[in-house]
Amino acid sequence: MNILNKNSVSTSGLIFQGMGQLSPIGIFGGSILGAAAFALGATPLSFIIGLLASLLAGNSIYQYSKKMASARGYYGYIGDGLGHIAGSFAAFLYILYEFANLLFILGYYILTFSPTLGYITSISIPDYISYIYIVLISIPAFYVVYKGIKPSYKSQIVVNMIQIIFVVTISIIIIISSPKIGAIPFTTYNIGIKGVFLGFITGSYLSFAGFGSIVPLGEEAKAPRKSIGMAVLAIILIMGSIYLLGSYAMVAGWGLNNMASFSNSIFPGFIIISKFGSVPNGIFFLLNFFVVYPLFVTMATALSRNIYAMARDGLISSRLSTVHNKNKSPHVALIYIIIIFFVLSGLSSMIFYYVEGGFFNGFFDDFLFFATVSTVTTLIIHVMLNFSLYSKFKNEGEKTLKKISTHIIMPSISTVIVALAIYYSISSLTFPIDLGPFVILAYAICAILYIYAGKKYKLKLDFKEE
Image (tube, rainbow, N blue to C red):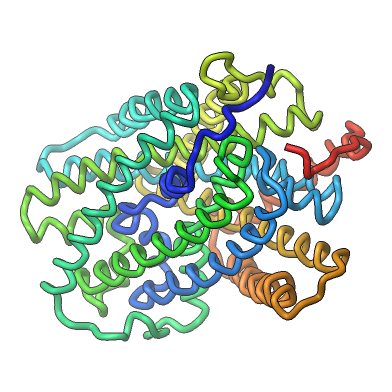
């Protein structure tokens, strides 16, 4: 039978599984690189906004997770509140979101691996070594997803604990050893609110975006109506603390007034950490580039469950709902994910490489482009979730003050923050990054046409069913 491995993941397992996509060590690399490109010295402030926005978005997940849990994840919540068509549309948006995640991670680590290896070894490393590295690290990642949810979250516990210990330790050392900058990074210092929100779009909110990756594990979690919501809030708070500490350390270590050059370096974390010797830099290198493993594991796990649920619901081919007899993983969906991922990665790499005329510019824009697509897409999904929560409040009889705050006020504030972020992303980004929202629009139109042309809107689904 095509049934996932029920009651397999505890709350702690969910927390570390979700952390795999947020990546603690990423605050020294990709997570801060996108934010600092626009927020400069105010980068820690952009992470505070990311934390607040994530908590508000997490509230909507928390409220819904108490009512229902399934492999549908977000699209189950949205379908329950806004109806089948909206739910189906959200399901397809989630596919775009996770593929964009995979592609921006690929772009960033292709961009940084060979130059960083050359930087710490003082040896000229060919660019193609980055491609070999990505292939080699993706094999064990996709394999562990194939093996099932238990190997996935158990490996995440080990990897993420090591990352957290390193990030906290080295951040404290950097802050103590650097010139004092006080509370200035928590202001709009020399950049304005526009720069802070652009940093929010291109880095800080994206850093938190993975907290929802555990929502599609609703059929594999223990006591999911309690554990998923608690795990989501725990992930946001734990990672928010790490991101604030790490981003502050990076600004202090680089120099508050030198942040304009921060993102021009593809390995600022290595430059700062190298001040403390080759040993911490070597440890950072190993952790920073092994992190592709937990990132790919979490993303592929969540995406495969979303596709599995869509296939089971009749939105796409039923073959994709096939579950491995022994591993209890949706292995057919995973195979399709791997094929599509490598096709898209090859095409996008060639396009950006030739359009931008070189390795560095090409993959830097590749990274920012897919980061923007990922961020804007998840923002849209969270707005839909907020409106779904409004709908539930309207249709349910209880209208207590608590319900008004959790189902109306908090989602409304979240929606306003998201609307501002989307506005800044569309109006201020430059070519080719500004094409991201248009790609999302084209994809959305295709998804809607598919839903109607394929008469998927006629499907009768009970979104409360697991």
